[in-house]
Amino acid sequence: MIIELCQEIKSSCGYDVRKIFARVGETLTDELEEIRKHEQRINKSQLKQIGSLNKITQKKKGLASELRQVIDRVKGMDYESKDLSNAIQSKDHEYEDRMRDATGTALVSKLKSAIVELKADIKDESLNEAVMNNLLFSCEGMRRGKHHLFDEMVDPVKVSGTGTKNNTEEA
Image (cartoon, rainbow, N blue to C red; front, side, top):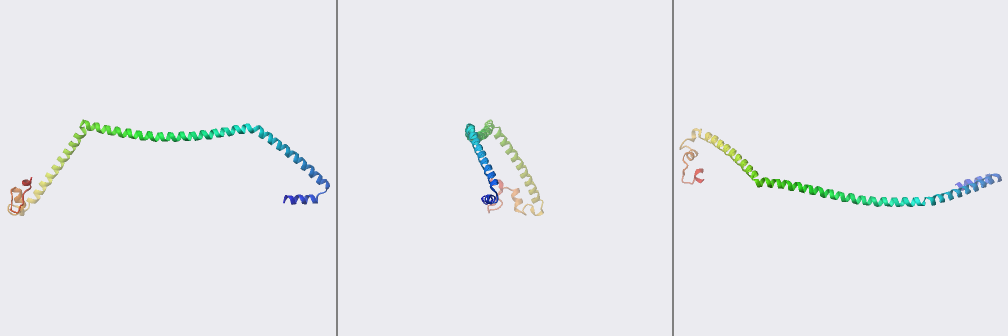
C-alpha cells in the first residue's frame, strides 16, 4: 500500500519535487547511519555494565536458591524442635504421675474415694431395703404364716423342703 502511494506520488510529481524527495531520502539515510553508529558505540560502552549486571543477576539467583535451602532446613529443624518439645512435656507429665504413684498418695486417694463411694452405696441400699421391708410387711396379707416372704425374714432356716433358702444361709 505504501509502495502504491509512493508510485502514485512519483507519477503525479514533477522533476523538482522528485529532486527534493531524493535529497530528503539521502538526508534520512545519512541520519539513520549516524543513529546506527551511535547505537553501536553505546552498546560497546555498555557491554561491561551489561556483563556485570548479568553476573549480579546470576549471583542473586544463586543466593535465592541458597536462601530457599536454608529456609527449608530451618523449617525442618523447627518441626523437629516442636516434636522434641512435645516429647519433653509428655515425659515430664509421665514423670510427675510416677512420682505421685511412688509416694503412694495417688493410691491412697483412690482407695479413700472408693471407700467413700462404697459407704454411700451401702447407706442407699440399706435405706432401700428398709423402705421395701416396710412396704412389704405393712400389708395385712403379709403376716406370719400368710406369706412365705415374712416367714423367710423371721426364720432364716429352710422354710420348705424344695430348697428355698434365705440369703443369710447362702452367705
